[in-house]
Length: 431
Ligand SMILES: *[C@@H]1O[C@H](CO)[C@@H](O)[C@H](O)[C@H]1NC(C)=O
Ligand SMILES: *[C@@H]1O[C@H](CO)[C@@H](O)[C@H](O)[C@H]1NC(C)=O
Ligand SMILES: *[C@@H]1O[C@H](CO)[C@@H](O)[C@H](O)[C@H]1NC(C)=O
Ligand SMILES: *[C@@H]1O[C@H](CO)[C@@H](O)[C@H](O)[C@H]1NC(C)=O
Image (cartoon, rainbow, N blue to C red; front, top):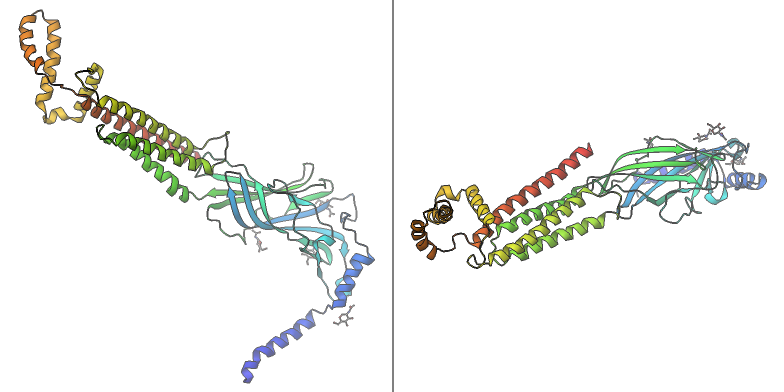
């Protein structure tokens, strides 16, 4: 072992000697001081530590938030961890530091001196007082007592779900005394916001702002620490909103399938069931609140309604598709619809099936003409051979196809309008 390797040991040794010289209080000093305060002066921790008992004891509080453990928006419980710095003056814990070899402060167990009976007012678990018996307080020679009770608190928080998942929640942590009234104890707040120096970021919520208020006009004094939280929407965007939008696209696609393919009804029902599952997932994350409804929930219900309608319409379509036009004649309004759809789809102008439709027209016009003109004999000879070898010119199948076309566009426009309205509501009301 060379002399160089000894340097660290030497340094440590010198440091210990140096520390001993500055911190000159001995075991006896501490013992003497505690004897003076608690035995000679007979400290009584029940007595409010203001020498003039008519004066109020001023308790100052500041909150250091260390983390948001959980925000159960369904049960409306915010679980936070952190500590409160509570400072007050105890007129019976004053000494001259020079008498005790420069003892400027001592640590005493929480249970041995007076502490304000502060607790979380809006607690959702049982009240048990701040700190615990193995917590220590710092007592300074000028009587100043500092208490740093650390804790995990479950507080009630009203959740406003209207804009879920783009919602902002405001939660209060109300710390107040239970027995001491505003005449006995007055609470002041040091900082105008919650101290976030030791705060660890939460993955689901962002703190937008915090505020602190002391309320001393009620029966007992309360310090209200308000945390404004913004939900990080990415999770719900990816896992709920996007799938719902995809499902509403699929919902429209029901009308792309032809009625004669056997899949149409089962596909419609599957889309409906998927939407209902998403609805129940969303409702599972929201509080069972009947006072306000979330726009996302309304959107899902509207989509589910669209889907239900699609299922019902599909069933009717399949039934119509199996009809025979010879047995069940097609009502004239459906034929008009069919003609209209053909015009819109521009089947006529492309002249792909000119024969079919000219025949159709001939039949329609000829029947009209028989009524208008009195010349029935010549018309009968013309129309009879046509009627005899007349095939079903407009079939139920074609009607179903036209209905598909109409429903496809009606549902598309309906879905787009609903989605745009919801997005607009979110955007306008968030400003
Ligand atoms: C507490 O504060 C009030 C107002 O600031 C003051 O009047 C009162 O004397 C203080 N009490 C004590 C014990 O210092
Ligand atoms: C202060 O400390 C020294 C030794 O560190 C001791 O001799 C002396 O008695 C102490 N004074 C008092 C008042 O306790
Ligand atoms: C008492 O002393 C401590 C530590 O030096 C200081 O922080 C505090 O402000 C003092 N209190 C009063 C009431 O002077
Ligand atoms: C928060 O607390 C730290 C440590 O006590 C302090 O340095 C800082 O100034 C405080 N911040 C605010 C905003 O009061």
